[in-house]
Image (tube, rainbow over all chains, first blue to last red; front, side):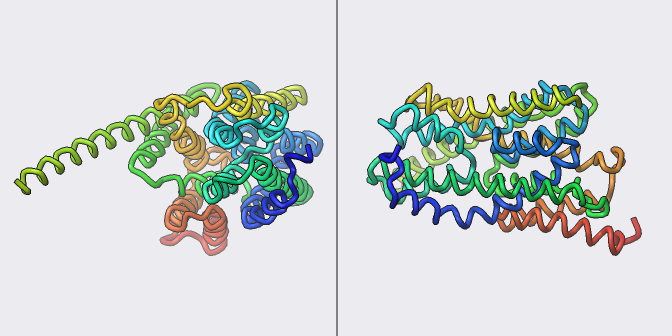
Length: 251
Length: 111
């Protein structure tokens, strides 16, 4: 283990994760408050937050549980929200060629948005670092963020039982989701994916078992991918046409 | 929801999430993801989250599903600030702040 927890790398990871704690701590706090409101007992709420460690999917599962959706739908929806982590997994796996299986298994446990973002930034800046330092840096980030996540969840849980209704904390769920998705709307394809999914969800809200959510999400994914492929082809054709023009102009 | 169902959600979501995180790290090694799969995966969060949030904003459970103009406006503000500043915390704070403000001073135009 010590080999993969090189002290310098680990300390650098702890320090690099400090700014991200500004996002992790309030998010964990909100989770704790909402878990208490959804009727989870403290053991269940803390079990979820330490086993899953993925805020957005925990929010989604809590919401569906409060709506009385079947357990399978809550699990399925939460898992769909977390599918993006397969991309993170692929990207970290590419950086960690040669690391033993148990080190990769441990890393998978703390692979969330912040850990991925901070670690990949470091790997881009220092591509030639030895494997031990790369893994140690990652574990420094993962341990710090997850520890703060769990502590913040517990604090929110303690607070949640006393939160008055006038605070409208139910709105923290949509507000948080909107704030998560807003920075993702960088391209036309992302905007199209979000808008079509939202429209479909509004129209399909009456479907049983919250199935409208999954159908709407699939529609959004298909529209986003189609727009991306379409705009890429269009840009390629335009560039080719521009290239031809330039050559003719020169001739 | 019964205790058994709650525990099944916790364990089910925990196992599913771990399997997703472990997928490439553990099983596929450093094989490439096919290009089409990568393109589709890119839009998963961008599609799932709006699909989840739209019914919550249009038909808030706290209002028994009755559309609430204050929540609509606050949601718009959270999204706008989120897009403009690319800050998650800024978006959350704006949404909650706008809702509290509207609930305290009332809606403009007496909606």
